[in-house]
Amino acid sequence: LLGDDMESDIGQLEHRIARLEGVLHLEKMTTAAGGKIFATNGKKADFHTALQKCKEAGGSIAAPRDVDENNAILSFVKSFNTYTYLGIKESLIPRRFQFLDGTPLSYTNWHTNEPSGKGEE
Image (cartoon, rainbow, N blue to C red; front, top):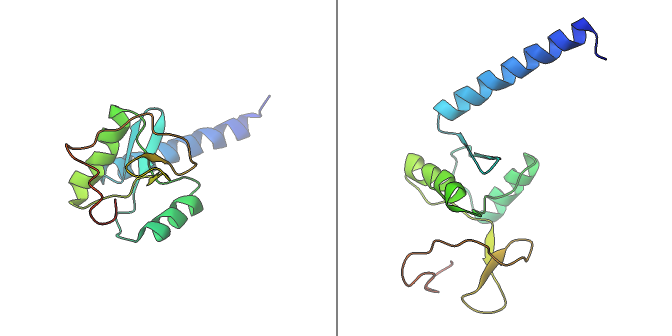
């Protein structure tokens, strides 16, 4: 069992974390979906820099696995009026995509005729 002082400290930390999460949510820097927290620093970067920053933060580049997660990612695109990277890549089979770990996609929401293969997908 925890002592009263430790329980008080934990309660204070939980309160501070909740306040910080609230501020980040209001600043449109975080959102939640599918039991996950999606976050951005709002800065533009190339894919490899974004991948590294996500790893440093203990996470990974977002890869939507359902419509709610897709909408969470889309909220950043709309808020910051820019593109975003997804944690997916083209497989060895052209026009077939997979998660960065090599597992097949379980959810897609491509526009008609996309991905088109024009430029980097």
